[in-house]
Amino acid sequence: MMDMAQTYLDKIRRRREEILERVDIALDHAGRHREDLKIMAVSKTVDIDAAADAVRAGYTLLGENRPQELVRKFEGLRAIENLPEYRLDMIGNLQKNKINAVLGHAGLIHSIESAALARAVSERAARRVEAGELSAPQRVLLEVNVSGEESKSGFEPEALRACIEELMELSGISICGLMTMAPRGSKEMAAKTFAGLRELRDELEGLYPALELRELSCGMSEDFDVAIEEGSTLIRLGRVAFNPSFALQ
Ligand SMILES: *Cc1c(COP(=O)(O)O)cnc(C)c1O
Image (tube, rainbow, N blue to C red; front, side, top):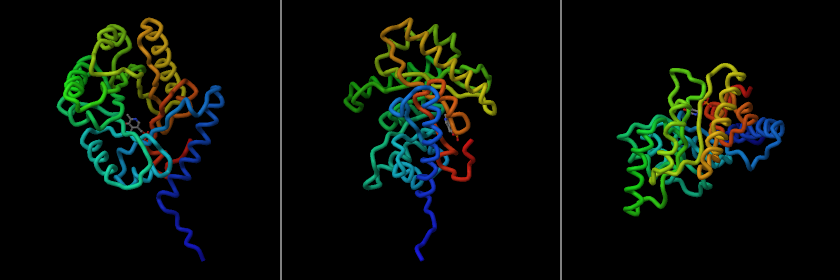
């Protein structure tokens, strides 16, 4: 008899296929294509081996929400031979004293939540570019609190409108798009939040032709389908990608 025991890699590979089926349905509803969407496996709750398995399973994008863990994963994954190519992004709260640790390790920082943080990242990144330690300005997304929940971080839309011109001038960062988190528990509310993010993107791009907000980072395990229908270009999947017993909704 062959050993039929499934490895963790088998399980998350199978899960990825199930996710892709849902993704394709949502893309189809919206008249969009696979090339328009990136799928991140949020590895914050799993160890380096499981993160490596996610890359072997086909994810080309990983996300971490804590600076120290991001650096640890970066180093750990780099030491593994024959791993397919991937990018590691920072998606969580970033304190100013942790910026230097993240620079050079994060492909994209999704969580720029204030003008002060944008300035601080830009200043440090510009210095590193000048010193030849970074090849380009740090790519970032601006996190927006679209839903207005007090517990959520991010720019209030009005505050972002007020400072976007200043942010565009910062030489150490390259603004690539917007990010948001939806309220939990209601797909309707989530859809409204994601639509609000898209509308804000359209408004800002209309006002500032030099601003190219290509990336809309929104949608997680419980609401990635509605996010895709509302225009998300990057969904961030944690539990649904890594926990085979988490029910796909
Ligand atoms: C944890 C986390 C996710 C993934 O959450 P799931 O609901 O487990 O998919 C996505 N984005 C951010 C910013 C997170 O912190």
